[in-house]
Image (cartoon, one colour):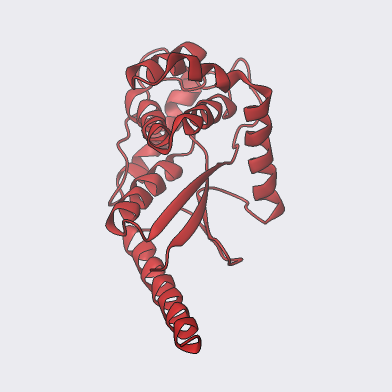
Length: 216
């Protein structure tokens, strides 16, 4: 049985990446055992920007109502409270990588929790105390959290971002099917992802059947 392996470049501060994550998670469930997702880091804010104005940031989050209005969207709300704005993209990616070192299930839990915390709960996911609280909330091993501060994981995050730019990724979310050069950019509707998967599975199954017949 053919399995499609997709690489997804994404950033935790990108509202469209949240929508793509919701839809691709649905695809992963609908095509269980036939679709595998690998999430990689793309940094919309690679370096800290101290002194960003909270009220300007709050006004910017009004634009999140546009992705919120789409079908099969994440949960969004305009920023509330006095936390933030987030300094840069790197901290949540490091925590997600630390979770991935625990298990695939831990990564999925942290990945989903980071997006919900930022876009639906007005939590600054670049803040160390907030990230640790989310980690503890999920009941993950306390000692594993320390890996988020390792130079090794930082190099991995930066390397994934560099790889994306080298192959032509200019924005996120971007999805690539392993073994092809095609890059699908933007948060596509769920129906588009389904059609793509159906078409690629049909081709893969046909190719596998041809190889089997040739070897008979």
